[in-house]
Image (cartoon, rainbow, N blue to C red; front, side, top):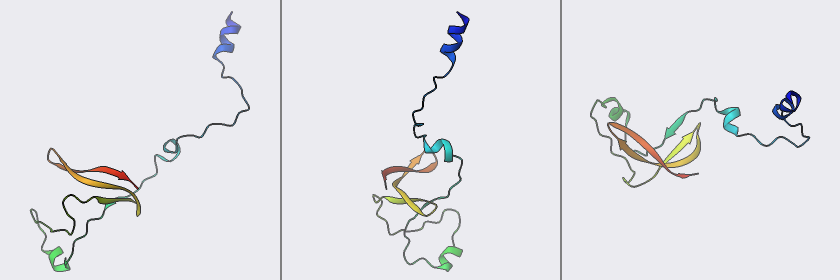
Length: 96
């Protein structure tokens, strides 16, 4: 009986090709940079130097417009801003 139990526990040997693995299992550790691109018109270096806590920067985006999300410069999704508690977050609205 022990031999039958041992055979049941052993993985079955097949010659079938291995199924494709999830890429996140192989490459999930690779670091990347995420960026959101918000157009700001008529913004100068002087404006940049005058920025301080509480400053407001007027953007060219309408408040309902989606913002492009890029990973290492490659467009991956469109997002919208969302406030969660006292943090600003982005919600993915559409994958590119």
